Length: 145
Image: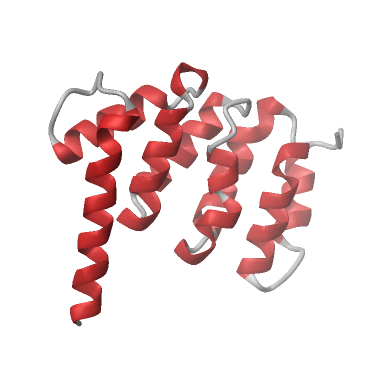
């Protein structure tokens, strides 16, 4: 664990390269070395740097880690909901699979219920067919173009 002030570390990471993708990779790779109480600050800096094509390798592993700071997880969850269905829908299922062990579990079930209609108390297994069908439908539409 690096004990330097988070502002110093963030400055180093943000100025480490002129390439935004390299910067986001650097921050994502270092995220777990950040003190838990500073993770929400780092999440705020990381999120706008990550393009959709890098979401699965940079933010997804962090979002799925229920041991991280709940405020950081909430930020990652919010940004996930603003991404494409191909990013959001599978992650909602993965978060729901964690059960109550994940701070965003209830939010994932509510999002699925709002999207597909139904009871937010349903288990992730109830939502999986809807997600699979929606992603297949979207893929078929893209192939028609």
